[in-house]
Image (tube, rainbow, N blue to C red; front, top):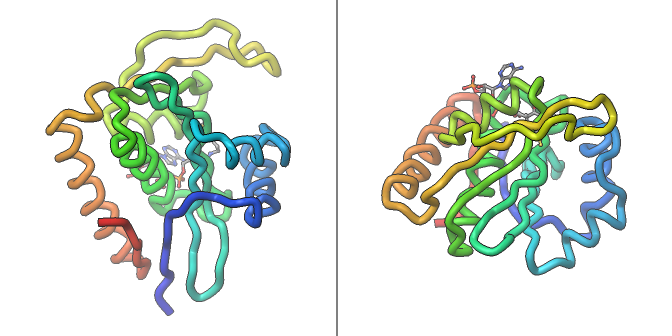
Amino acid sequence: MQLILELKPLTSDDLSSVLEIDKACFGGLWTLSGYQREIDSPNSDLIGMFSTQPAAKLLGIGCFWSILEEAHITLVAVHPQYQRQGFGQVLVYSLLVTAMRRGLERATLEVRASNQTAISLYQKFGFKTAGRRRRYYQDNDEDALILWLSGLQSPQIQENLTNWQQNMTQRLLKSGMWLKVDA
Ligand SMILES: CC(C)(COP(=O)(O)OP(=O)(O)OC[C@H]1O[C@@H](n2cnc3c(N)ncnc32)[C@H](O)[C@@H]1OP(=O)(O)O)[C@@H](O)C(=O)NCCC(=O)NCCS
């Protein structure tokens, strides 16, 4: 049976599944009340990627804060059982489209300097390294790289988003997955 994938804002009903992904991917980054605050905040977009068929399941989450004209991406995570199938790309795409529709100009984020998987994911979307925060992560004193993507409202990025969507949809279709996206 074909797997149907859907992106939608997370709600309080999803919180136990969100915490499961958070724990598996980050070892407990935010608490339940932390996620609830994101759901309640008008400046936060917390998006879930679900499979709706054959069974409803949360596969990944992504979040950004709108700060002035910037989308500050705070997390992207795919359940470990579902990684390496293109779902991380779908989540980043969805965050960027949402930010663009909100009228934001740029996207930025911090990522652990050793997290090559996430760095290559963001580079695929054109993110560039803009700086480094020394010893940003307190658990192991690791540096953070600051990544930027400018021109969210430019025709070039809008064309790129359309192309990314077509490529992702094709890739998923080849694996028997159908991605439902807004027009
Ligand atoms: C980072 C993360 C979201 C990627 O999710 P994913 O669904 O596996 O990513 P995708 O399958 O869409 O892969 C996207 C690209 O990332 C890179 N990538 C993904 N997994 C990789 C790996 N194990 N090694 C190297 N590059 C990898 C590749 O460039 C890949 O593109 P390709 O499939 O065309 O080669 C996932 O690994 C994750 O949840 N990690 C833990 C949480 C985290 O570190 N989040 C980022 C910081 S907020």
